[in-house]
Length: 388
Image (cartoon, rainbow, N blue to C red; front, side):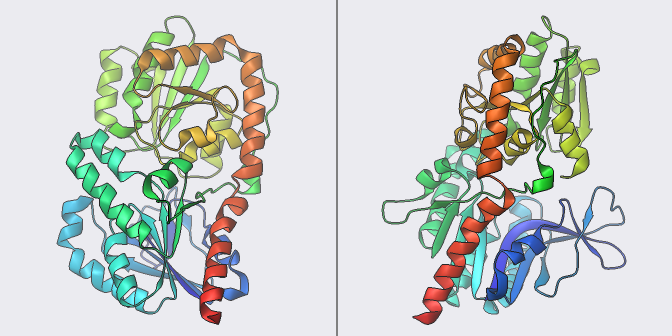
């Protein structure tokens, strides 16, 4: 079985032609899930040539792994300019595949879907985010969001096997006759878990955000809530990630005169350094306007950090209010303030939630138990089709 994964993953290549990624090399482990059934796993992504390999992870050599590059692009306009070259690259790879996994809503999935249909390949679609809600929150243009929704739904409905990372996306993009199974992209290996321990809450209270620094993540809400809560409690806030909204958020911090209490650490690659940030934080907050699932929430829970998140998208799948964490109303600063203060005033209750969340994630959302849902379904479908 020859499997190709089409996404917009970025592969970084140094002058010695070594390949790197921004996360530890999980590709070997993904290949292992398919066992002897797998002959080759093709990974399609955008290649970026660089001499700066700090915070990058070298990709190991494996006889079952092939890396294919498509033109690097930034945004829809750049993608359209390079569409012909990207399509030709995808055509060659898909022609030599048996199964093609499309990561949605990435743009590369659209031409890849067309070639899968032309060459009658087994199509596996996995929707990892909600393009409609993301585009609505960024642009305010609901027509663009609706178009994205229709395109992605068409691809999903016309796939052979369908997955979504949350029940929210499964219900939204599925139909009565075309059910979507739930399987997320957990990166949580055994060594990435840190069990909860009783610890005294010390000042200053450490609040953490990890993610893309962009409008749909609602970080401005967190900063505004932080500014209110700091009047009663000794706090600091760490923001980890990069993106187009950094300058705007720093200006907001300066305007509120709280820059001395907030640290922007930039992007930190998934690994020991980032896991340490989770473990040292008291509260992890994800105030998104749109969220397919929220992998960072799983990472926080796995490292015994209390979670507060907006009640949106797939987040309620993992943040079960007053059980594994606290949910607040989307876009409501005052509600977020109440939830942060509730944590600070109810340490015993929050310790209990932390323990329940840790157990929940370890039992249900590790790398193996989530990724095997997809691999087993693909192996079964391929075997049945081959025998037929």
